[in-house]
Length: 161
Image 1: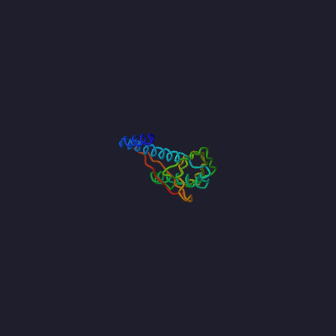
Image 2 (image 1 turned 90 degrees about the vertical axis):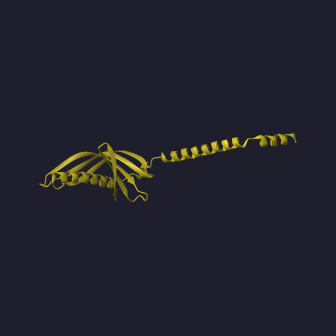
Image 3 (image 1 turned 90 degrees about the horizontal axis):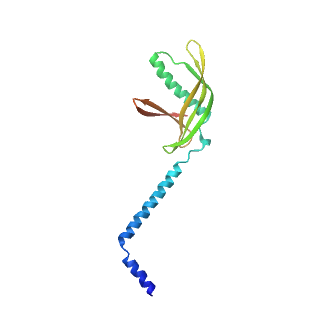
């Protein structure tokens, strides 16, 4: 009986503000645990099995080159040369997650064959760096291109099918 009285006396004398302090501390710890758990899940890079195939890489490189050639041809007021890409060699793949979608930074080399208007052909071994982002259903890809001007970086996104 004495034991019950002490317990009752303890619970009666326990200040309510202390309980709220522990309760808020416990809620804060739970939120921190959930935050760390969510952050840890986003750190896992996407698997390399989902990296873009050679056809997508070739289309992305060709698109990038056509963009640059069109701008150059407009400035020089000439027709752009015919472009042929072959022998793509990917030397580096860095998988990341951007906007909750798998993104792959690819670096490597390719053989570029240019056919100029007067039937001259020139072959060049060129390097590339591209960022490709896989879409949710995995059927299409986005080419992410950076443009730096006047200390500002802008990103342009193009769909590659």
